[in-house]
Image 1: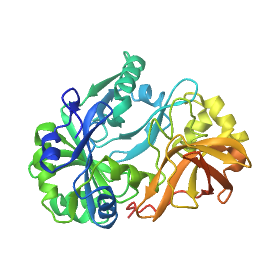
Image 2: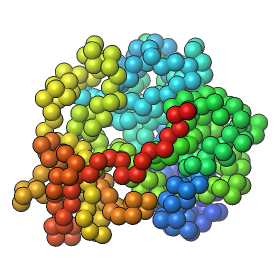
Image 3: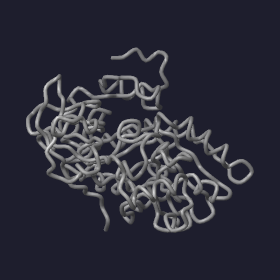
Amino acid sequence: MADTADLNKTPLYDLHVELGARMVEFAGYAMPVQYPSGIMTEHLHTREAAGLFDVSHMGQARVTGDEAALEALITADLSALKPGEQKYTLLLNADGGIMDDLMVSRPFGADGGLFVVVNAGTKGKDFAHMREAFAGKAELHELSDRALLALQGPAAAAVFTGLVPDAAKLVFMQCGVFTLDGVEIYASRSGYTGEDGFEISVPADKAGKIARLLLSDARVKPIGLGARDSLRLEAGLCLYGHDMDEDRTPAEAALTWAIAKVRRERVDFPGAAKILKQIADGPAQKRVGIKPHDKSPAREGAEIVHEGEVVGVVTSGGFGPSFGAPVAMGYVRADLAKPGTPLELMVRGKARAAEVASLPFTPHRFYRG
């Protein structure tokens, strides 16, 4: 177990230790990387039943006032965000680089403001950027008194709606305010594993109670960061700071679908001219899925080679337990982004055969009704 004395701790830290988790540093927090059953077992359990993840290290905030102040920083069309809906969107810098990816939702009704969830490693920078841009127009209220749980997997809906019947009306990317065991929660039908499930914001002082209630169901097991990473990689989902960052645009990261049509038409999102030109002409590099041909996983930083020339770099890589083979994502020259294109990956100094693969590696099973 890592030395956690100087690290931030989530409200569930003591529960993780009690459950035998191996704790590591992640984004300044002491987080569980795995429990005694191991990453492989946790991964497969999530795909087969339901896994409970502590994601309380992520940043939660409420935005009130003129919503145009937030919209000017991101790629979503907030005017189209109805009460009870959520959007995945991108926070961009002035040059179109991705500062973060985040969720914006309207769980509180038409006049209750917006609920924003940002990544742990960027939340300080994100919130400072927002506050500076909001000055005099909108207000950001950081919700540091709340924890965040993710319940994911094919049994997640049965478990959660058994406790919160009203949540059964939700489909993918819908949200609302509910009551769970007497506690007011914000819940959305979403998650970052490719599975159906829910993300649940709860008061920090009630997080242990809610987590224990969910874990009391035999279908639910605690899942650490290790399996969270392999699950999202199989699902072809980006990890901020690895598969995208301020040096990558949405066009390069294959995330142009996150730019609302009306925002493209108005050319009014940060870096719009540059990004729209990349969409029209094609970017120099593009994020792709990569399937190694042997059993040697290629890790982040491995060079990607085509016909003897280095053409890109692996940004995420490892073994896909559900896929049954190594999987990776990385950036290659755009002319090499077609599935089936042969590549080589430099693994421990040796070139190993691979090919560009379609994403995701395992099908998404989000519940769309």
